[in-house]
Image (cartoon, rainbow, N blue to C red):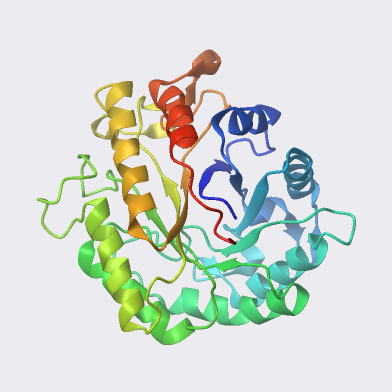
Length: 319
């Protein structure tokens, strides 16, 4: 596992080889690849592995780490709009069995249980995610004992909720995940858009405060400095893909200012093992948060991130 990564997927859905080239140019080592599970399992128990096989092969050939996300299941594996624990365990087992480095299908660096599926609305309970982790973790470990398992991401940006969700997950699923996981955006509906260093908004934390909340929860659970990764963060520079105007940065320089602050906080935290920026794009049109925009134009953030990574090396999490 490396520190600097990127999240791509869904809008492709196949992995564009330009993503690999851009990762190598930037110095990114880790790809978090997320396509809807329903595109892989289109009928119960029958898998079309082509999207994941292709992405795994490309990353393995390039020497990049790839983590697969189990998200957005087909309808037959949904229970009240959430992934069924049974289905999650079965697909997790199939992934761990296929991408074990021995079967001829390549190897992966981790499996994530859920993306934002379990925390996509205010006041969500951690119990469904805990149950999914309890179901999936042992079958993954039976296949690959050392393969890291990520919990689904905390998304909702509210101090009280963040603490309650993480505390609840520790209480109900301790020992069923290897890496804690959160997303950081400053324009979740109801929060508005603001500088990620701003700590003045009631009950809405700056990134530094968010990290402190997670550290407190980990410590109270008896797991101080528990490995934690921010698997998505970003700031829009255009309204593409439905980014509301109120969420768009003033300019590309501001986007980089915000991203640089985030990277500094992640590196200084001591227990954050990596950060996956959202996103590199290469869709048509690119996502408003993409570091590469229309026509392959590399943003100010892209150019500055390349320098930042070169100047701020971080030891590999396995070291």
